[in-house]
Image (cartoon, rainbow, N blue to C red):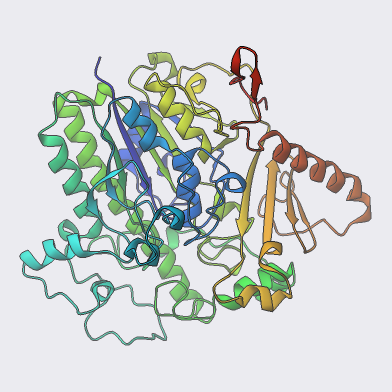
Amino acid sequence: MPRKVLLITGDQWRGDALSLLGHPAARTPHLDRLAHDGTTFTRHYTVATPCGPARTSLLTGLYPFLHRSIRNGAPLDRRHTNIALEARKAGYDPVLFGYTDSSADPAVMAPADPQLKTYEGVLPGFRLEASLNEACLTGWMSELAKKGYEIPERLLDIYQHPDTPKVLERFDRGPAVYKAEDSDTAYIADKVLDYLRLRRKEDWFIHAVFLRPHPPLIAPAPYNTMIDVAKVPAPVRNPDRQVERAVHPFLDAWLMLQADSAYFESQVDVQALPESDLAEMRAVYFGLIAEVDAQLGRIFAHLEKTGELDETLIIFTSDHGEMLGDHWCWGKAGWFEASNHIPLIIRDPLAPNGARGQRVEAFTESVDLVPTILGWLGRNVPNEANGLSLSPFLAGKAPVSWRDAVFWEFDFRTPHTQRMEQHFGLTSDQCTMNILRDHAYKYVHFTAQPPLLYDMQRDPGELVNLAGKPALASVIARYAGKLLSHRMLHAERALANATLSPQGVVRYAGPRGV
């Protein structure tokens, strides 16, 4: 049987933003159908934010404390393998539609190489078929120009009407200047379909990356007004912004940074807008999700028509989530669920009928996708990988052993400006946090700031920090120990399990354990 892989990622897509999970504002009928024929992982988490670190972990299968590309612009060491390089060993030519936000390794490049001036590079191993990211819109712009659109001097201005001021006092929900069939989302879908039409009888590996619902929150008609504001849930937050800021020094600083019209690519100060405007922004966010779903429907329909649907492992996920006003925050960072809980739907054509349509509530992580895909392709998983294969779940079986918690980290250093370091009076290497979350608690450990503790059973909205309560000191100690054990278990082992002996190099390549 042919084996094809379609790895789809959205950008900034919250884990709860699927209509199949009951979200009142999500319109995702095509993803719902995919889930009906596949497996939905309801407690899936990215192990890092923002885009660059999140995608690096997703595509290498490594935790950030191993690959160290821990912020947008932090180089990725070329010694690390990834899903594209491993797929090439199996004879595939992995193609990319969109972006991976990969920062090149300066050690293997000339100092003047243009790739060292951007974090929006392409991960080694992928062949770029169509580019579209925040800085490089040229392919899409060329298509718009051919259709008669007036192209602005600064390409990013395509997301705004020509007479829009540089700084807005109110949010404008008006439609984009381009039609829905000409949008950036449609562009990626069109290019994927162009590629597929000539490859019916081939094995292929496609990574399709959609920019949306990433800001700017501007959608083409009808998606800009598709979602009724009344259908969008109110944000989860403390009743007063100042109460929220007092929770922790990091949260105070993050909210301070958001009072800038450039912060959310929306030309508005999200901390000063009236509540009605913020509600409109949330509605457009879900309109953009509906648009991505509609374009995914075109791709799924093509695969069904050609018979390739039952030859293809289809994975839908995101790099990270979106705060969307929760805790008065927008964007992605830190420890909150909205930022790190992401969707994951996998349709395995080899899965037995009895396993289809199931929902898995076990904790899963973005690093699990590399071993899952490689296992499906019949390839060995790199010895240094941190993730666990999801294949037992796809077959409808419970794994013999599985993790009871998820881990992620966030690095808020700013080595090029030292802004955060000076604000906190810390060194760059002290601007870090690690998070461990299980069914009972979420523990947030800072390198050089006070910890946080949340009771996830009684306080799923993460509104009350319990770290200062003396009665819970033993809980904090237990979770700090659990976090330490996790870091120790997942230390780099590329050569640690190799031994030089009279027989030569002897290696252990078995599981790490959980």
